Each structure stands twice: as structure tokens, then as C-alpha cells.
Length: 89
Image (cartoon, rainbow, N blue to C red; front, side, top):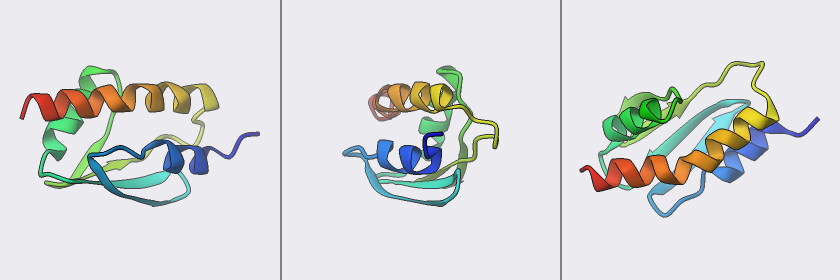
């Protein structure tokens, strides 16, 4: 089985992401601007659920039954989610 937590942590790097940290599948993502609400909305529009922790941090907390395919689908959508949030700011 592929190590999903390291896949998620490694796949979230982006020019607007300043820090990615987590334990297991619970991941905090710091942004370079206070656009967490926009990122959450863009993720929801794309079919994913993120939580806003602070104005510049979102949390990814997928279910423990997350499959590798589901993780890959989110990581493929991640750049577009960020692009949408930053374009609409």
C-alpha cells in the first residue's frame, strides 16, 4: 500500500503554499496570503472539503478510508483550487 500521508504532504507544494505540516492524514497548509476562505470555497466548488483554521491556513482532514486514487484526484485538482482562489481575490 502506498504511504498516503507522505503522498499528500509532498504533493501540496505550490508557490502560494508557505508550509505544509501534519500528522498522518491531518494536514495543515499555510498560504502566503489571507485567502483561506477563498481556498475553502474553491475546494468545495471542485468537490473537496477543506477547513479554514485561520485567514492564511487551511486544514485537510480526509477520512481514514481515503484511497490512493482519491488522494491523487485531490492533488491533481489542488493547483486549480489555488489558482481559482487567488484569481478571485
